[in-house]
Amino acid sequence: MLCAGQTATLSVIGGPFNSYAWSTGENTPTIETSGPGLYTVYVENAVGCIGVDDLEILSGTLPPILNAPDPICSGQSTIIEVLNASLFESFLWSTGETTSSIIVNTPGTYSVTATAPGGCSASEIVVVENSGATIDLTGITLPVTSCTNPNGSVDLTVTPSGSYTFN
Image (tube, rainbow, N blue to C red):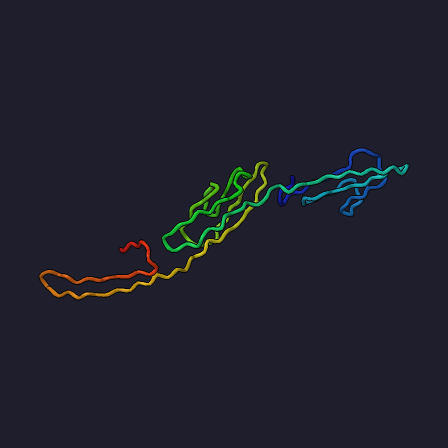
């Protein structure tokens, strides 16, 4: 396996060989690669015998897959989680948390770097949108009609309907 940013040295062992032909186009006994893929080498000795070998280098890790949280309003929260968390050993979120899921209460961009067994890391980001919901508040005021027994009131209507707290 080859992690992002790593290189691998592939070498032909045996011989002696007079010529080398790699699938990358190189003609040396040793090549260096920085990406996953199938690598093939053809060799030929002094009497014309040809040998071939293949080596497949796999990518070190898949990126973490994050859920797509719903937009949130002020005062609400949502959970962002790594859906393929079982592929990883550790997590580091842009919030500093180190669990496979986090609870956020502010719209914004959040990122996680997940580290797989063997040390390969991959990152992903998700944007939590502001729902932009508007709340309309209308009221009817009933004036005070008595100074000794105050009886005025305000009748409020909130749209959309729901449970609200007034401070």
